Length: 259
Image (cartoon, rainbow, N blue to C red):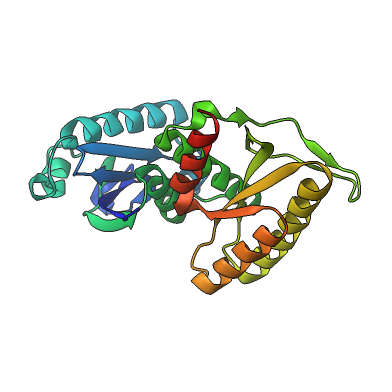
């Protein structure tokens, strides 16, 4: 599947726009070929409060939602040559603004939105960053149209030889029961540790419990050689490994299995 050429802009907030002190509170991705606008907005306001002090949370979220609706209404169905960010901002001198457009490539709009939001907006602890990959996987399955075909949070599977439970995000039946989970491999140290754990789990599931583990990973800037070596190791253990950008390939397998 060829990457789509998309445009994106960052939603920024300031209670004092005249000071030009803004903070990122959302991301907008424009798929001009299909006239589609996709947004991801901040829920955690801790970074906003750290910079600007206490704010009225209810008012802020309501105002941000209204701004997002205006963005969607204004830019849907416009082609790239007709998009004028400066004009849009000039007509709405308020607490929010859009940054200039930038180009970005990706396989699906939902994955691009989540990735940009994580990189440009979020301010979370490591544990919450780990959770974000699960959100990205859900968004990708939803956009691929297979979310309704999957079991959400299937029952944990106990691996007696290691004394652990494997809790997956999704599952589906295809001869054997497939457990689909999301994971991060975006640094060499974390990637190797995560891979070792998942390969052991996959091997045990395949050999003793007649189940298969499928892992969808965010690899960040890891080289292709690193990813392909891990993919081979997963296959040897009776498991499968996909990049997050390859969710469409996995979705095709799911559709074929549950017809």
